[in-house]
Length: 250
Image (cartoon, rainbow, N blue to C red):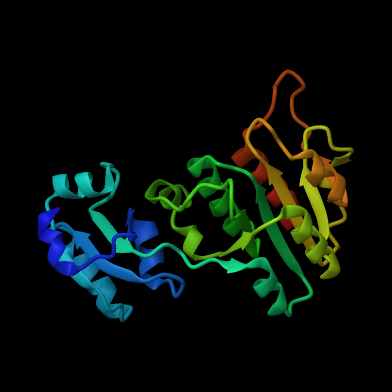
């Protein structure tokens, strides 16, 4: 859009839309925000938000149809923020600074659907997990729809980047993590796991394919969720939510 050219928004910036995602992005210390676009109707609200939270950002007024075009959505709620992608840390960096005896980490093994990944990140934050690990390769890039699916919680939980999963599992074990893989053929019911373990990592496999065989061979245990035998399976996001809820009970 020509009227935005003068603001020198970086080419690799993404747009974040929706009330909750925009607020989380603006308050995040893990990304840079370049420009806030809103409607005349919403200007006072967002101007007050920026001032009260001491956010240094320019605000530009646009028409609703222009926000539709920028966000490729009519679900923007009158707000679009141009920002950098979130800054991911490596798992090894996170573990070096981990001082708490208790920790809950979620690992996504080759999940590629942005909606599922965003929904899982939202649930991980809801159930008090400390971090979500995403593979450097074979994972979705951060997109506006993924951020919206996470309801902005991607900015409120640590997002870690991992390489070779088997090697990362070994690193976690050295840090006293007990590693569970969620698998429909698991021999442990999710409600029966030992939740007194201080450090637990849960691995969720790709939609349809599930966990890779090499992953299964390296975890400490395979857990399953009991469902109606007439039901084929839960999708990855729903299964992850149920499993994290059970783990978070302790």
